[in-house]
Amino acid sequence: MHAARLPTLAFAALALQGCLAKAAVDVVTLPVRAVSAGVDAATTSQSEADEKRGRDIRKREERIGKLDREYAKAARRCGDGDDGACERAAALSEEIEALTRGEPRPD
Image: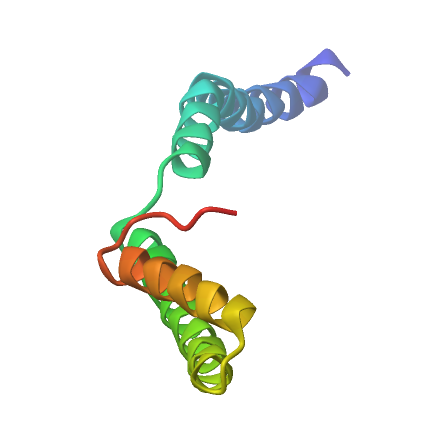
């Protein structure tokens, strides 16, 4: 009876060695994977940085376009004698100039 169990136990011991080795590898590599995931989350790839810069440029160009339309409207009113529109046109012109130089716009 004990002789019949011996091959089964030998087979089980061999089979479990692979499972234990796999578990040991998983435990050892887990911290490395965790740190790697953290680094990936914390760093920005070049393509992500390029996309962000492109979005910022598009937003700035859209803002400049909107300010330019407002400036044209204020300049027409200024030409009609509206002093408030002249002041507005001057302020808009300054903001457009600052944006075209790449300076951050005042909010």
